[in-house]
Length: 70
Image (cartoon, rainbow, N blue to C red; front, side, top):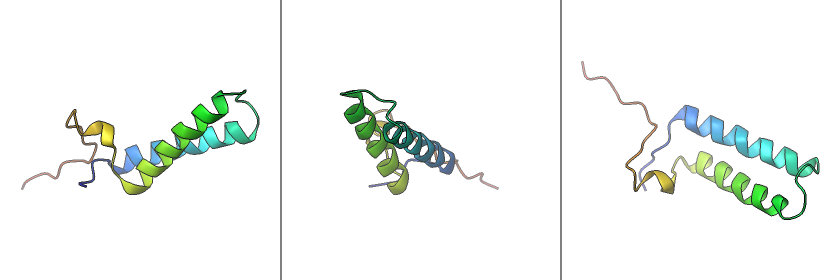
């Protein structure tokens, strides 16, 4: 599994996941939305920790900055 997420992408996903967890803990999400938010938060946090997003693969997306050749 080749990493395809850059640092900024990882940080933004971690922040978004944490925000969703806070919304769940604060009771903002009603009923079924709690489970939807929890699933999305888990996905964001897990992908940010491993540095790989499976949805990027079919589109050949990588947010890792390319090194300049000198």
